[in-house]
Amino acid sequence: MTEKDRELLLDLLTRQATEGLTSEESRRLAVLEGSDDDSFDLAAAALMMAELEPADALPAHLRSRIAADAADFVSTNVESSQIEKAVGEIPPRRTPLLSWLGWAVAAAALIALGINISMTRFGVTEIARNPPPTATPTPMTPAQSHDEMMAEPGMTVAKWTPAAKDGEMAKVAGDVVWSDKQQKGYVKLSGLPKNDPNASTYQLWIFEENQGDKTPIDGGTFNISSDGTVVIPIEAKLAAKNPSMFAVTVERPGGVVVSKREKVAALAKVETSRPPDA
Image 1 (cartoon, helix red, strand yellow):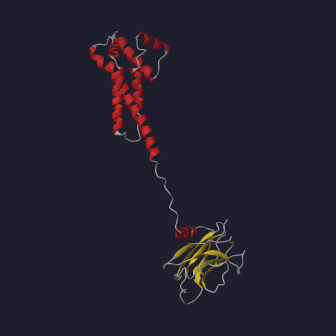
Image 2 (spheres, rainbow, N blue to C red):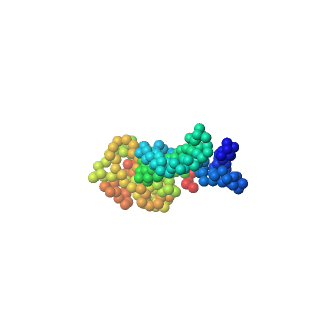
Image 3 (tube, one colour):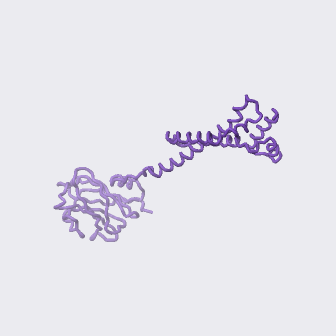
């Protein structure tokens, strides 16, 4: 093979691996006995594989195993007859470049392919075995819910005033926020004396237009066990519409269905109304 033929062979093999050959070029490659040479195709594959980057570092034991398998592949499949065929009539000084280029790059391609496949499998397995923890929303406290509701438009708001001017309940303060649309609300109170749950309980009442003033709606019972401000969710037993006043009374343990209002602790009249709920 002349120097010109060798250069033509290299050119045709390069084109075949990168852009493809015309029928005439394929015929010329066959004449030069290069049709079965896939070294340059493997080289192109290796270049493409080199652009694939695993998301994380491959475990050392997998990398070593893949490298060993690639070495075994090269030593097993590259026989002396194939090397001699690749060398052909090329002068001795060019033998290493042309005979080993394709196979060395093929080994690189195999390693790159093995790494990416292994990383894909390893990653999927690890994710399936150890799924990322799901963030659980932290529920809001009654105080946080009260403040959030207070900031919303369309809420009914009333201020607590003591039912007595003197005595242990004379310093009751706080507010009530209520939503007709949501049928929920919160009571914020301070200054209520602690109670013994075995002897008495506090009970909330909602005065609104459906039940009238004689039979206000039961808003739930609660106890005071510490000093300071408490926030209590309203537990209305019936649907309340347009409340005009809220009251807290002292009742027997467990509460009552209808209060005699013998001991009223605090009152909260709705004097100014916000825009009604849409």
